[in-house]
Length: 334
Length: 167
Image (tube, rainbow over all chains, first blue to last red; front, side, top):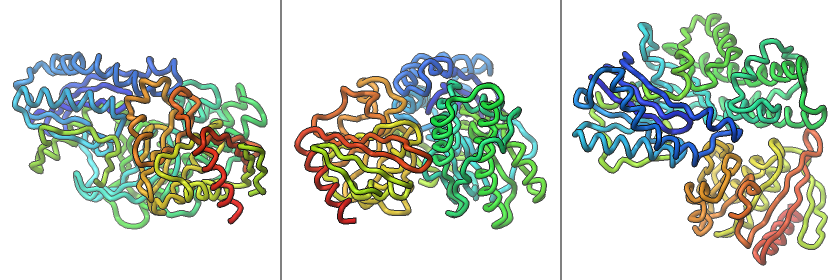
């Protein structure tokens, strides 16, 4: 079964063709990061406008790459939330029009479920259910139990900033541009993580995260000492990243030690962070738990993961109504 | 929390911790009425979201409801005594973008709007409002300075000061 996935919830306009939920036949992404860089952040209106420009060419390109026509597609899956309303609407309306015009079944997919499914694409070894998942991106930091496709339980979430948001905001404080996560990660490699003393936030409070205290500590450090350069900049990045990683890893391990899981899945843009990957590798190896992290391009927003999640929803007999709506505040458990 | 120092329609308060900033927000949340608009301004890490978390509790948004940063989502909606629209304009640039997120509908609704980074789109500010400027004094201390606009802004400040005094 061939599913066409469409994703437009934030920065990327993407389309993919996925076979049986597991094999990516073709995918295309038009990224807006270059457009946004000039503004120091995601600008929603621009995002919506650019999605309108990109969505049809991206779908055309993916069909061409897969060497098929719409008549060979079996269903359409589209991200319907959470995300920016204007951006989501572009994907949802396009998907509805194509589904209606071609008489194809339509499925609305939760973007976060997409991230959880990315780990099933193009691999032999997949996690078994139930497994634990750490979702870390610009808008999300959540610890989730995946009981089955479509059945999720939220164990913890951020009480303030998301992990990726903290990276972006700290990057902005340090004059590193947007998105700053990869650059902070790179600078951190040559920095001394013990150089700057930052607070260890959220030691208690169950499995919830908090990153705003660390961000604020960097802000007050910069206010006091100015924006650092060269080695001092690397040291500050290393110290900041070490605190964020320590919190993500310690809470995730707390959840992992609670009961037996069929592996740990880590997904979302921050899953590309090398410091986080290394720390998780060490901790899961020590516990004899399998770690599943999608490839970097599948950690960030993409349409293949949406097609995958859509496929499993279709198999359960789900169909979206013809008036499927974009749901900016959609949660994983709703 | 130091004693409020009232000068006309301006009020200057110091907070010595997150907890105290949240309590100040809580006192404001208790006196907010449908249609009220509060603008929160100040640098990254100055305590705006922390204050908004307090406002949510003061408005009766249940403890178990997480009141996170709206930077990525632009708007978070919480249900308490009144609907709370927690808005963050950090990533917006102009009025047209505000219209796209339904900002005027929020202001005209029966809810309460707490808006971070209002200075990004000053032309969208309504005539009647309370503004709070947050400044970082040191690692834990924050200074909150208010400005009132219109009659409701003044009343709101008076009621909030009373609540603060009572605590």
